[in-house]
Image 1: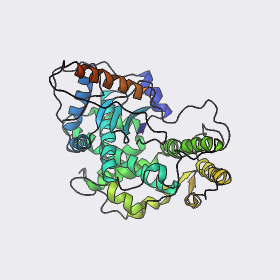
Image 2: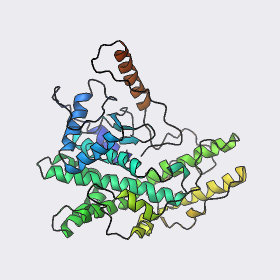
Image 3: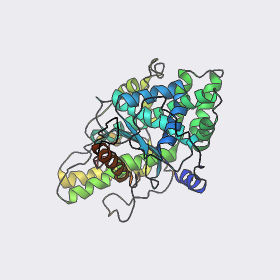
Length: 376
């Protein structure tokens, strides 16, 4: 998932995507499933897909997502992210309020997540991992998705399509700065070392890290306490399994031409820059495990105790652990996306039943996203 921070939200909604004209007869350069798009949305999605497919890295990510059976569509306009990959139901969504230049890199980012889902299928899901492992694996997924997006955008820039990389630089200065530094060190050659340096730049975004800590760890802990108060542990994170830095690096850096992190000591993911969490995140987590043990008898996740901390980027929007959540919205909100997609697919299914299309398609109606959140 590619979240919008407050500055990005302000920028997007103050300067919405410029209305563009698209070729209504354009064909997809990669055979991806865009059945989540309305007829009106299809030309825009085709244009974005075809721009990304002009880069080698972009085409690779699209082909992997297509092979994995992912459907592509646009999110509800009320969502607070640029894009999302729903691994539990094989769907990729793009935020319609962003510009096409922004969505080219976002599509690469989310398609890269789809490939991660395939490569990391033997690694436990986020709802099973302990806190340290959630940080280790989830951050690496986001860093990899952004690094690969930069690679694709650079390849497009070299062909004259400069908008995606310039827009990426505007939204993610720390990542772009790391990319520029790595590129200069490699004398302007876009190679694995540059991708690895870009990957590491993701970890310089303290605010972004805190947003993901809230969405992937703290929000689910509040959900769990609500369940404990009802006398159940159904659909709550277990925090019992672990994944090592070696396992993450082996899977995360994969490309069809080799692992771009092959020259790195995998244990770099355990360094303070990469594994530290916000001071409030650590306190909230420790408070949660104390509450969970009191209410359920389940032992604490000790992995969080040894984790280094950094100063929080902003005040936590959620209350102290164990206090009523009140009218606080979701950290990661999809708005009415699932309802929107269900209506599109239902309409197409009904259309097919009437025999009005030559090529029959039978898209399954999507289930609601599980509360445990199988998305990236």
